[in-house]
Image 1 (cartoon, helix red, strand yellow):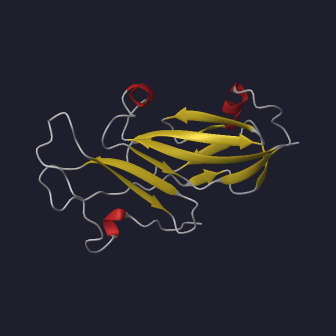
Image 2 (cartoon, one colour; image 1 turned 90 degrees about the vertical axis):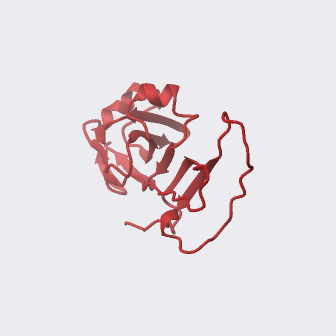
Image 3 (cartoon, rainbow, N blue to C red; image 1 turned 120 degrees about the vertical axis):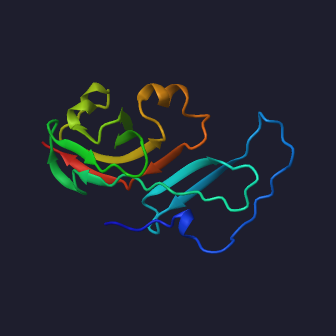
Length: 173
Protein backbone atom coordinates (compact mmCIF):
# COMPACT_ATOMS: atom_id res chain seq x y z
CA UNK A 1 0.00 0.00 0.00
CA UNK A 2 1.45 3.35 -1.00
CA UNK A 3 0.58 6.03 1.54
CA UNK A 4 1.72 9.54 0.64
CA UNK A 5 4.08 11.26 3.02
CA UNK A 6 3.73 14.92 3.88
CA UNK A 7 6.76 16.62 2.40
CA UNK A 8 8.15 19.76 3.98
CA UNK A 9 8.35 21.33 0.54
CA UNK A 10 4.58 20.92 0.04
CA UNK A 11 3.53 22.79 3.19
CA UNK A 12 1.97 26.12 2.28
CA UNK A 13 2.53 29.37 4.12
CA UNK A 14 4.97 30.52 6.75
CA UNK A 15 4.49 27.86 9.42
CA UNK A 16 7.46 28.70 11.60
CA UNK A 17 10.26 31.18 12.07
CA UNK A 18 13.90 30.43 12.63
CA UNK A 19 15.86 33.02 14.54
CA UNK A 20 19.52 32.86 13.60
CA UNK A 21 22.25 34.56 15.64
CA UNK A 22 24.29 37.08 13.68
CA UNK A 23 28.07 37.23 13.38
CA UNK A 24 28.74 33.60 14.18
CA UNK A 25 32.39 32.58 13.76
CA UNK A 26 33.04 30.83 10.44
CA UNK A 27 33.53 27.42 12.06
CA UNK A 28 29.88 27.43 13.17
CA UNK A 29 26.92 26.64 10.99
CA UNK A 30 23.25 26.09 11.67
CA UNK A 31 21.82 22.67 10.86
CA UNK A 32 18.10 22.05 10.44
CA UNK A 33 16.54 18.60 10.85
CA UNK A 34 13.55 17.97 8.60
CA UNK A 35 11.53 14.93 9.62
CA UNK A 36 8.46 13.39 8.03
CA UNK A 37 6.23 10.43 8.69
CA UNK A 38 3.50 8.80 6.62
CA UNK A 39 -0.08 9.22 7.75
CA UNK A 40 -0.20 5.56 8.85
CA UNK A 41 3.11 5.85 10.79
CA UNK A 42 4.70 3.07 8.71
CA UNK A 43 7.34 5.07 6.77
CA UNK A 44 9.54 7.93 7.88
CA UNK A 45 12.47 10.11 6.96
CA UNK A 46 14.80 12.61 8.57
CA UNK A 47 17.21 14.94 6.82
CA UNK A 48 19.77 17.44 8.03
CA UNK A 49 20.37 20.66 6.11
CA UNK A 50 22.91 23.40 6.56
CA UNK A 51 20.86 26.60 6.88
CA UNK A 52 21.87 28.94 4.05
CA UNK A 53 23.45 32.20 5.19
CA UNK A 54 21.47 35.41 4.70
CA UNK A 55 18.39 33.55 3.53
CA UNK A 56 14.75 34.34 4.22
CA UNK A 57 13.28 31.62 1.99
CA UNK A 58 15.06 28.32 2.49
CA UNK A 59 13.70 25.22 0.72
CA UNK A 60 14.28 21.81 2.30
CA UNK A 61 13.23 18.99 -0.05
CA UNK A 62 12.29 15.65 1.53
CA UNK A 63 13.56 12.22 0.46
CA UNK A 64 11.02 9.41 0.20
CA UNK A 65 12.11 5.95 1.45
CA UNK A 66 12.51 2.80 -0.63
CA UNK A 67 9.40 0.68 -1.23
CA UNK A 68 9.73 -3.01 -0.33
CA UNK A 69 9.11 -5.21 -3.40
CA UNK A 70 9.92 -8.79 -2.36
CA UNK A 71 9.03 -10.78 -0.45
CA UNK A 72 5.49 -9.46 -0.15
CA UNK A 73 3.79 -9.04 3.21
CA UNK A 74 3.14 -12.39 4.95
CA UNK A 75 4.81 -14.45 2.21
CA UNK A 76 5.39 -18.06 3.22
CA UNK A 77 8.06 -20.41 1.89
CA UNK A 78 10.94 -17.92 1.75
CA UNK A 79 14.21 -19.84 1.31
CA UNK A 80 17.88 -18.87 1.39
CA UNK A 81 17.67 -18.52 -2.43
CA UNK A 82 14.78 -16.03 -2.25
CA UNK A 83 15.39 -12.47 -3.36
CA UNK A 84 15.14 -9.54 -0.95
CA UNK A 85 14.46 -6.42 -3.02
CA UNK A 86 13.24 -2.81 -2.82
CA UNK A 87 13.07 0.31 -4.96
CA UNK A 88 15.64 3.13 -5.04
CA UNK A 89 13.82 5.66 -2.89
CA UNK A 90 14.90 9.28 -3.31
CA UNK A 91 18.50 10.51 -3.32
CA UNK A 92 21.76 8.63 -3.46
CA UNK A 93 22.94 6.46 -0.62
CA UNK A 94 23.27 2.99 0.72
CA UNK A 95 20.70 0.62 2.15
CA UNK A 96 20.57 -0.92 5.61
CA UNK A 97 18.18 -3.88 5.53
CA UNK A 98 17.22 -4.90 9.06
CA UNK A 99 15.93 -8.38 9.84
CA UNK A 100 14.37 -9.35 13.17
CA UNK A 101 13.52 -12.87 14.32
CA UNK A 102 12.31 -12.97 17.92
CA UNK A 103 15.12 -11.50 20.03
CA UNK A 104 17.66 -11.77 17.19
CA UNK A 105 18.35 -9.03 14.68
CA UNK A 106 20.92 -8.30 12.00
CA UNK A 107 21.55 -5.73 9.27
CA UNK A 108 22.77 -6.17 5.72
CA UNK A 109 24.43 -2.96 4.47
CA UNK A 110 24.78 -2.58 0.70
CA UNK A 111 24.60 -0.15 -2.21
CA UNK A 112 22.51 -2.71 -4.14
CA UNK A 113 18.69 -2.80 -4.26
CA UNK A 114 18.51 -6.58 -3.97
CA UNK A 115 20.34 -9.59 -2.58
CA UNK A 116 19.64 -13.21 -1.77
CA UNK A 117 18.25 -14.03 1.66
CA UNK A 118 21.27 -16.34 2.10
CA UNK A 119 23.20 -13.21 3.24
CA UNK A 120 21.48 -13.68 6.59
CA UNK A 121 23.22 -17.03 7.15
CA UNK A 122 26.43 -15.05 7.84
CA UNK A 123 24.93 -13.95 11.16
CA UNK A 124 24.32 -15.97 14.30
CA UNK A 125 20.56 -15.60 14.57
CA UNK A 126 19.62 -19.15 15.42
CA UNK A 127 17.60 -21.58 13.33
CA UNK A 128 16.42 -19.95 10.06
CA UNK A 129 13.93 -22.56 8.75
CA UNK A 130 10.28 -22.41 9.80
CA UNK A 131 10.71 -18.95 11.30
CA UNK A 132 8.95 -15.60 11.10
CA UNK A 133 11.06 -12.59 10.12
CA UNK A 134 10.26 -8.88 10.14
CA UNK A 135 12.23 -6.66 7.78
CA UNK A 136 12.58 -3.01 6.88
CA UNK A 137 14.99 -0.93 4.79
CA UNK A 138 16.66 2.33 5.75
CA UNK A 139 18.33 4.47 3.11
CA UNK A 140 21.28 6.55 4.35
CA UNK A 141 22.52 9.34 2.10
CA UNK A 142 23.80 11.42 0.41
CA UNK A 143 26.69 8.97 0.22
CA UNK A 144 28.05 6.67 -2.45
CA UNK A 145 29.84 3.82 -0.66
CA UNK A 146 30.47 2.07 2.64
CA UNK A 147 33.73 3.92 3.39
CA UNK A 148 31.97 7.27 3.11
CA UNK A 149 29.18 5.95 5.37
CA UNK A 150 31.64 4.77 8.03
CA UNK A 151 34.06 7.70 8.04
CA UNK A 152 32.34 10.94 6.98
CA UNK A 153 28.57 10.46 7.12
CA UNK A 154 27.65 11.26 10.76
CA UNK A 155 28.87 14.86 10.83
CA UNK A 156 27.91 15.99 7.38
CA UNK A 157 25.24 18.38 6.18
CA UNK A 158 22.84 17.07 3.55
CA UNK A 159 22.62 13.67 5.19
CA UNK A 160 19.33 11.85 5.45
CA UNK A 161 17.82 8.61 6.67
CA UNK A 162 14.55 7.36 5.24
CA UNK A 163 12.84 4.22 6.50
CA UNK A 164 10.46 1.94 4.62
CA UNK A 165 7.44 0.22 6.07
CA UNK A 166 8.01 -3.03 7.97
CA UNK A 167 6.93 -6.39 6.54
CA UNK A 168 6.77 -9.96 7.77
CA UNK A 169 7.61 -13.22 5.97
CA UNK A 170 7.90 -16.89 6.91
CA UNK A 171 10.73 -19.19 5.88
CA UNK A 172 10.34 -22.77 4.58
CA UNK A 173 9.90 -25.73 6.97
